[in-house]
Image (cartoon, rainbow, N blue to C red; front, side, top):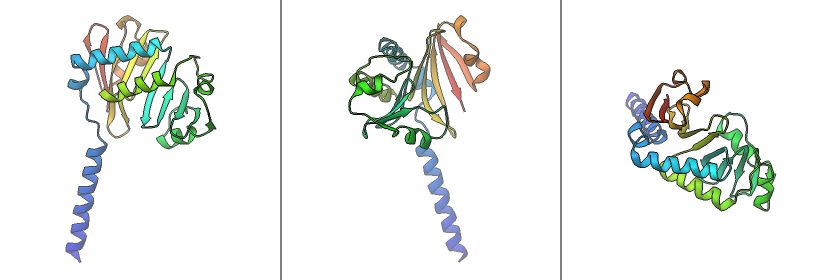
Length: 192
């Protein structure tokens, strides 16, 4: 009986270890601050601005957020993105309203924009290719924030593009576990 309990404990420990490893991101400071990733990230930020978007977030394959709207592209439904919370609340909100064409959704974007679905999907695909989960554009301060991951257990990392003199309180180094200037107007951050 004792050997059986020991084997169950070992098995549980192994499963938990693999689960934690599987949940952890594969991105690190070296990757995020590499010249290649910086160039791709700046291009994505510029593309977000060109599309007149302020927020683009990738939750999972068919669910994403554009500005204030969370969209389930597979089910052709959408809703207003919640202010924080667990993923489940986002998924539920994404199924609030049905839509037949993309114009229904663009009419609800705040700020308004007439962006094509194909352009959003192309930008999401480029984000996913380098692991970015979220891009935010603070138009007031002309700051872009790009984020890799959003895990309570593992934290997240990212880049901030913008003039150092225009960084507001939400961008102060004291709010991050790690914050450093990579080069002029480019900052790396981590929250653990």
